[in-house]
Length: 370
Image (cartoon, rainbow, N blue to C red; front, side):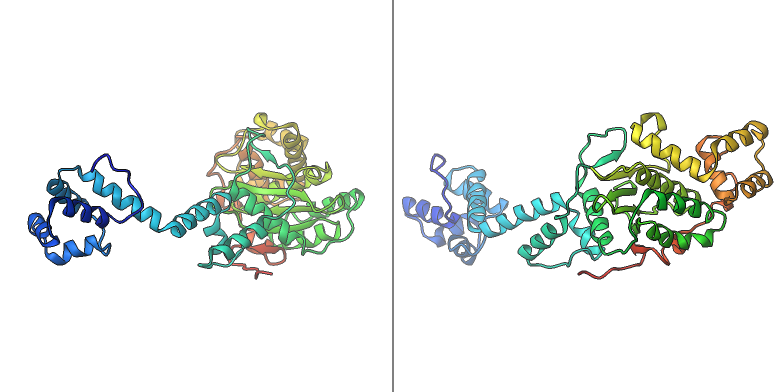
């Protein structure tokens, strides 16, 4: 029995062979095992699976190991359910290339029990012309994760539906001056989408997917159609303007034409140190800092007032720079001049204001499937 080749037959077929070899009936086996006749009959006829307990009883009755009967049952189960095995394999591959659950939750694709339909949706969704992605991270050659790719595909798809004027660097330079005039009043952030669109830059908000660490992206639909996409995962006025400024720096330098720029951990506790960044990212950082507050003026303020940065001093300097106090506070925190909990009330929220006018996917904004 133990040397017999295991084929894809139910264990009951082998039990019949053993009974015939011994001249036993099903009733004899039932009494030997201490089971009801109906239980043994169901096993032999393939209507009941061999459990570990029954396998042990069969092993004792026929002088084999329990593993023989468990292996026979497993082999038969696998062979008799090829469709289920294939579907599990297909679903595993699908979930490996895309965050399917999150995509369904966000309304990016439709939930369905039809595996083929689900596969077609995912393939269509990911069929975006994403060039080699440049990361804002210490490992620039790291591969984009499936979840990051899905976010970028969504941003690209939505950006194609946005309208914007013809882009030129001259018009964009004027738009940057206009953006600076919006930095003093949080309510004025609602004008950002319009100002950028008039300069030829498509601007949108796509809420980040879990564990992507994305703060923003800069990519081009073609050589004259730049796009800035933000996640606004940190709802603070200083973070909003800094990340926007960073992406504007990429646009001015025409970064992203040959490969999408995906900026991770620009701000927050896991912020990537300046010295660990590529030259392209350092250039965008410097651009953002200068756009928010003239760095020579900021350094002069620090040299004269450090370390006693009172709320009154911060507000006074912000008024001179014509920016919101939260922006100055954010710069001081970034430089390590003040603690994280200093004047937290200045770091006002602006996400609900920005999303009033910017195309937004997430944060309660649902864009229907095309």
